[in-house]
Image: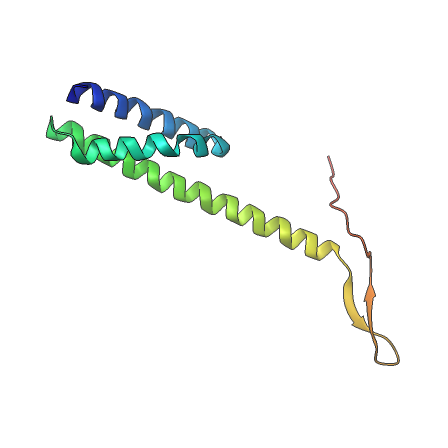
Length: 114
């Protein structure tokens, strides 16, 4: 494959990746991982117009920052859901005789409100 064709494919992929990241379709990124590795390998070994190569490298770096932000957002959502589950659970306390007891629901359920 010619160098220009490789760069065209890399550019198309990076644009698609950015679109997915900006639209919040994070689940689709797992399927793109192999393609991303191939694109990055292409960029590191590519020869051609230096300005175009730099633009593509910059775009890959920008997409990497978007991926990191998306991963951080997912991790924060997971932590927040865990906090909500803990808050809905029973509260540990002590009885009048000094024994441990729990106040509140024994089987907490996630409550959804419209």
